[in-house]
Image (cartoon, rainbow, N blue to C red; front, top):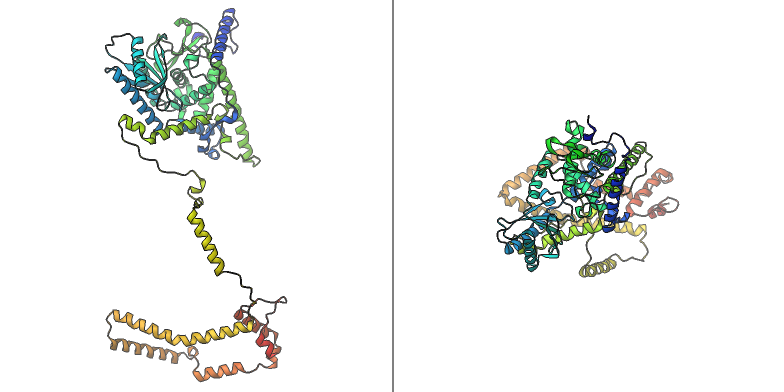
Length: 580
């Protein structure tokens, strides 16, 4: 096989010829100069966070590869634009479109790039193309007229007209939302490129996830702008797409990319960080993906990425990415960091199986992607401001759209979640005054009584009196009950004679039942009185001397009077003491 078409170098070491040495030194010097012009941001470790880590069910995964796969999906889902963010960007584009139409009535404004493919980050810019049919003036003059119209309509700020570039553009920040906007004229290839990428994303569902992770990684390192030598959004999409096309297992249908996103991410960094032959090989997306010889194409054989434009074969998409040596080193470092993190996670999971692990307190500390990417607090704050701008309604009024519905108030307090304790009530002045008043009333009702407790004799006497009173009240209660029963029976229109016969029949049935069961019969008045007289007789000496009977009587009087037992465990019965 011809080595010119190999993506991997035949030898791991780079060529040591004098020409390659000079070209490599030139590339490194260009990268250093660009780095001085646009220094790479290096945020402190504490300023970055991984809020998507709380969405991953770490303990349900079998191995680190599965954990990384689910974390990639959670990260992309979290960082993708929400409905409010997308709608605010769409309405800002509508404001800009109306301002341009007032200056050039025949113009058509169309978004492309990341907004057209829905693969933009929270801080991504807006790429717009103004199509003007039968344009009379040249591009530079038309750009300046559009710039003056945008200033007059007060929809742009910090505006710069770059008319000496290969593709003249207008750069500014939108007055609403502060989005970075780039406007070009009659560059329709961007619209076709967005349509082409959407077709590739539909064919490879995992393409969008890897592109978003790579864009986050390049944005963190400051290598995502073509004007500073970085890798642009279109070049990143083409690079990941070529990786999918040339992967042998994906090409043969042996694996599902959506179930192996973590492994594919590691292999992407490994390929373009260690093994890809940048000097001799270029990337083409035609015919299902292939590599071509840079020498036969007439491109310089330097450490520079070359990607053939799918729409124009003579155009090199990544021609302006002159910092490719630095980007290659970043890819290699990302591969090492991810591999080390997965190795440590594998050891941790192995120790968990034997019960000798250390439990981590937060899910964010278990993130594997935290070794290469993270989110700054300013990004999260910006997303909150955009959401507030959407529900404010002023932008809807300016573009003439219906006002949005207010979002439901959802508390993120764990106490308000299902199964949690209810939130504590908020204290008000009226509530505090009412609480103090209730406490004062309770103190008056339940105030402590310092009077001595009544003895058992008084309790027994009070019990006998209450029993006598209940016996006196029983006939009255029975009369009231009978009257209520008669009223209840009268409601159903039962004649009095019939009720009387039914009552007599019931009384006769009860007498017969008592006669048939003598054991169930109650003693008559004389016998009952005789029994009470027998209870009043003094007990015999044998009964007094029987300790078991005496103990039973004491227990009975203890339950009757409610007295507590003394220190020796014997309840004092005054009646028993008198008899003794």
